[in-house]
Length: 163
Image (cartoon, rainbow, N blue to C red; front, side, top):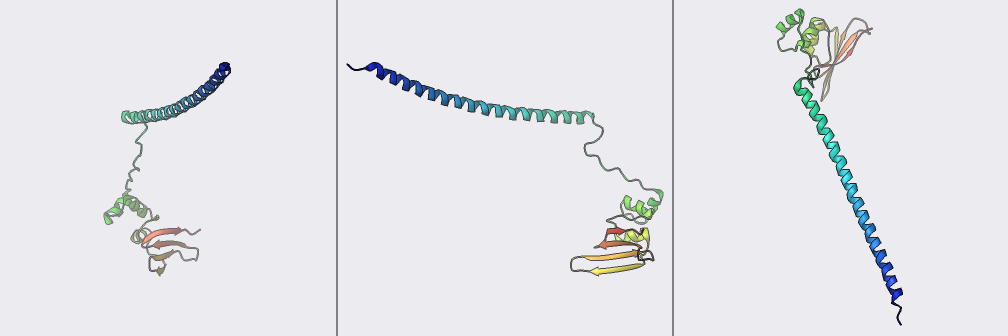
């Protein structure tokens, strides 16, 4: 007689093992899908929060609930009376330069003509003419510690004030 009982039990065990392996694989697939959904939900939530924040900011800007423009313009320079006099003589100069010249002050970026108008003629000028740039140093004051201005291609680049 053939023992079918033992064989059947073996098949059943193999079947259970095979089924449990599929179940494990199926469970892993479910976990992977759920993880993708969670990541997708996080991304969606982050995007929604960003949109909400931007909508709030734009809404406040449109309603005027802010304290001023987002990128305010620099304040307009008002010409002083002496600055207006300089502006009459040199209409193409910016208002800030006209005010500085009127106060006998210099600023980086000024041209040689603007510095002459502010401080007058220098006592001494040292010039270096190179292949790519022209450099001049203007000396004001009678002592070696006097103020000097360094120009590069006609623009004020460096100011050394006397003590």
